[in-house]
Amino acid sequence: MPERESSAIVNDPRPVVRKFLARQQHEGLGAIVRRSIGRFELKYFDPFLALDEFSVTAPAGFPDHPHRGFETVTYMLQGAVTHEDFEGHKGTIQAGDLQWMTAGKGIVHSEMPAAQGTQKGLQLWINLSSKHKMIEPRYQEMLSKDIAEVEKDGIKVRVIAGDALGTKSPIYTRTPTMYLDFTLKPGAHLQQPIPVSWNSFVYVLEGEGIFGSPKFSPVTAHHLLLLGSGDGLEAWNESSKPLRFILVGGEPLGEPLAQLGPFVMNTQEEINQTIDDFDNYTNGFEKARHWRSEAAIRLGF
Image 1 (cartoon, rainbow, N blue to C red):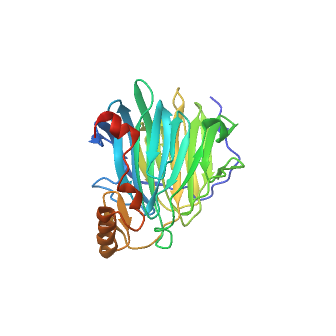
Image 2: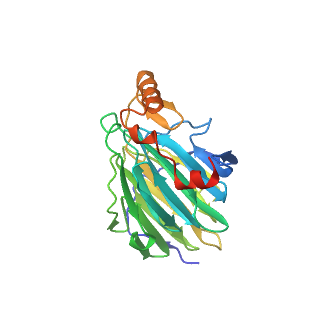
Image 3: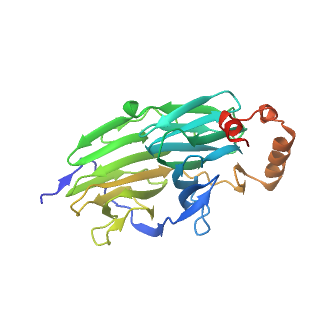
């Protein structure tokens, strides 16, 4: 089969330096996640704190819980999830939709199934620099129809953040980030530039592909690949079925990290202060005192 190539030029392809299979574990209220970043083998991949491929069927879900000091990026693959928070923001994202939430100084929210059957998606946690950890919460939401999608030479890409195949996303990333959803037809060959100073990884969603070098063995779904140094990614689909994966890259912050579950700061003293703020409904958590999500009330939490 003839090889189809993208027009981008990668002179120094990044090798795969580590590979993980994201195994299923329970999280939230009866939800199942495949966690790849944020597990014991890989606690942190600067600036990325966690990557979960989640699967949830009502009444399971992620009821009322807090965040401070980072961003959550939720990208739906199947079904729908309704989000509510103590600021009064509420919305539902469906397959192909995106929510980029900046928790900043503090948010309490819930994420619960909004459709029949099983809801599936990805949630990525991106750390914020010390100068941005205490900013006001903010949302960027995009419907599937509004996410830029380009197809060329057997390669389709949905540009969630950053740019690919000459198309740039309007999403603003405080921590400079690229987030690309690629589908390669059989025989396709991808070259995607990545800023040299950034950390980057691949997470395979469907099919099997070869990454980094044509000498490497094919990689299948639910595997996370950490990429080494270089100026971009090369990938090949030599199978008979489509290959789908996300490519994510980000500029490392290079700052100290202190984390206690959903609170991510720079020092233990800041974590202690965050616990006090949350317990006493102060400094960003004032509205948590009298708030419960509609989902929590309905389910009797």
